[in-house]
Length: 200
Image (cartoon, rainbow, N blue to C red):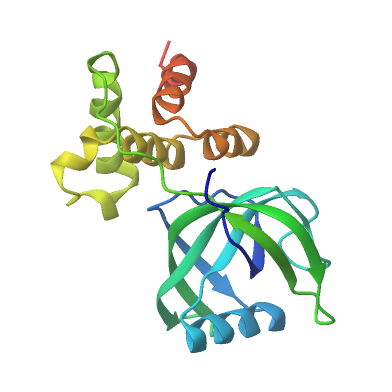
């Protein structure tokens, strides 16, 4: 009998972007509910959930989040030039939202089931072009990955998630790639998308 995946409750931060496992996300915090979220996570060392917005906006009334998101852990914070709080986060495990509730201050909390990490798989030789494309994208768009160990490019999961975050994909495409559980299938999907970005 398969082990039951534990359920936990986390604060949710709906955004107009997708955070992938291992990815980095810079956030500007100004709403009181999210300042409380940062205080809570900093005090307890806990994570919060980042979900793509399906309906609504990042500020104001609580937005409708996608059912699958990624846990974010705060790795740094600073005061920005505009006087607002800036935080740097790193993506951890993916999760599925089972149910949500809205606190009186408008902060969304979700009962979530965390997904196990993907099994590491070697990049098949037919996807070698994707490794080259990622190297070029990192040079121009992802300088924080410039010093990533070379063997990460051989990890199908890491390669797929980094391409998904650096390519100019629509939100629903980003979400579809996040929800895939087979890293080789994710690479195949990305390979099929690539011709759209080739110059005529």
